[in-house]
Image 1 (cartoon, rainbow, N blue to C red):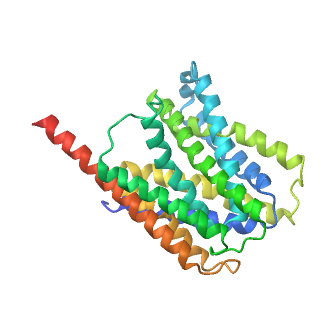
Image 2: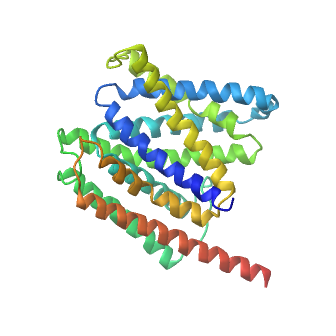
Image 3: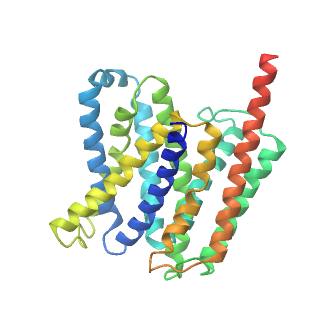
Length: 313
């Protein structure tokens, strides 16, 4: 049973890799906003029903959280729409790395600026060097992608450049969105209700973009629609549930180390995708990024352990 938590976190990483590679292929024939509308629309319905059946009293706790819900919706819509635009044009492993890497950098910058939403705390020299390494790995990945050295050729330079820029937005926005959801969680609102409320802004944006553009063009049959709906939705719901359970059974350091390997999982899985070729420069950037993330978590963990020891002395 002691391995269950880490295995669930590994499952989350692998499933996210499959999501990115699968959806990158789907986006070649189906508009990304149509897939977003299907996946997040069904996810919202599922969690709304689940929350209403299991914990109907939770809805009464939402009073006074209107501003937080609005901010969470805006940042979530910004994050996912930016992420999936990038996934349409860029190599999935690069997308996953750049999106994930902006998370810790966003927290650090917000903390240094004294923003209340981020927890303030001192950052040691070794930890700061790790964050500098993360930033350098992301900058190097920009160069790899823009110079055509990634697993996908640059077919449209400005679309590729825009995708890279939007990943800075997506990584920062999803981090801020999670901070708002943490605020609601700390107020006693459960994950089912938060998940139900998180995607209304994204669904509205996806619906507007879908019906004002190509609609559901590219979905060839009811079976094709059902397959996309099932896989896209399942790849959103099941991994998040597995991660939630895994986090409660795994130490924070182990969780972060395993999650830092997510881009490696994506890179490995995309090797079976005929659209992409093997890219050593991409792999080097990903491995350097993962090493820096692991180092930052280890140094952060050492700092917290020292604080606990001093407090208990």
